Image (cartoon, rainbow, N blue to C red; front, side, top):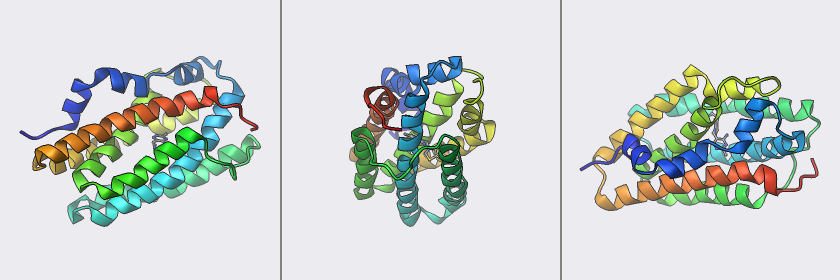
Length: 210
Ligand SMILES: Cc1ncc(C[n+]2csc(CCO)c2C)c(N)n1
């Protein structure tokens, strides 16, 4: 019996809710988030996306060629994404040349460690990481400025379509995976969910000098 991404969501609703529903996002939607907390998240997410770019490049290196279209689209979108983070940070006068916080380090180390796992596991993790932002920024509903463009960037229908393609690719890789690989994919999904929750929380626990 194969494993699918939808089964992971159905079997672990609590873990996934905690990854995608957080006071940070609700306060963005209400316009009540403290700028210092938002800025902490923004800088750390930029540092995360740099490592995510390397993670995606390593996935491309082991992907079957028929998955290249989607993965290359994702990689080339990251060029704009990183530039956009730099623009947002400059607008807020934030220093991007900053140390990673422990949660950001843990998440980046985790993505690095996934390179030792089979493609099906990495494709599942990639889908979960992107879905977390797609749903997280979509679920609260329309956000007021200056958060509108953040919510639109990751909640928009084109990004949802991209995440759907990632799901299809992960499902295809999982469909002929052994029991052991399916267990690894489940563990990856749960790790991503936990790290996403911790990443939102990081904005509150860290006293930022931003
Ligand atoms: C902690 C954290 N988790 C997931 C994402 C999602 N994400 C990673 S790269 C990227 C750009 C398009 O592929 C997006 C949306 C994030 N940014 N930060």
